Structures are given as structure tokens and as C-alpha cells.
Image (cartoon, rainbow, N blue to C red; front, side, top):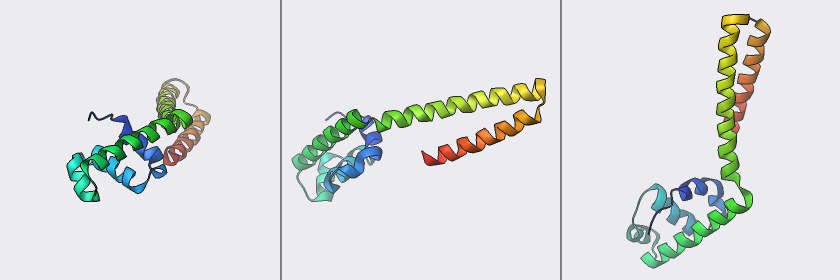
Length: 122
């Protein structure tokens, strides 16, 4: 069975929507890199049962992402926050070299504080 590495990422977003055995099967398979046989022994189910759990759970995760798009939105927000930080750094450097404005310095501090709060939320 080929591993789709997106599953581990989606598990972080939608894992609570799965049954406990589905969630554990995916975690063991994708995050702990256990074989189907090892997972079956740990969960007291057959190797085929583990495979079925994984396939059903993967389908649920991909369906949830298709409908809700939380992982995609999270990634986009994260990328945009990084872009904003880069631009703030450029503004700060230019201010230090050219303008030396205290108002700009204060605004940068406020923006960076707000960015830090957003970082902690995501």
C-alpha cells in the first residue's frame, strides 16, 4: 500500500471525526511507520481490518478537506503571514537607513505583536 503523505497532515485537522480505531490505525501507519501486521497486533484486529480502517479513514479525511478546505486555508494563511513578516523586515530596514521615523518603528512593533498573536492561534 503506497503512503500518501498528505494523510498525516489531514489527520491533524480532521482526526477527531474518525473512529478511535481509524485514528489509531492512521497514526500508527503514517506517524509511527508501523506495518499493517504490527498495527493489527497492537489494536487486536486483523491485518485486513487495519487496511480497511486506513482506506476508509483516508477517504473520510480527503472528503472533509474537499468540503471544508481547512488544511489548504491554514497553509495559505501561514504562507501569507510569512510574506507579511518579510515585508515588515524590508520596511524596518529601509526606515532605519533612510527615514529613521519613530512612528514607523512604533507601527512595526504593533504589527509584529499582532502577527505574534496570530501565530499563536494557528
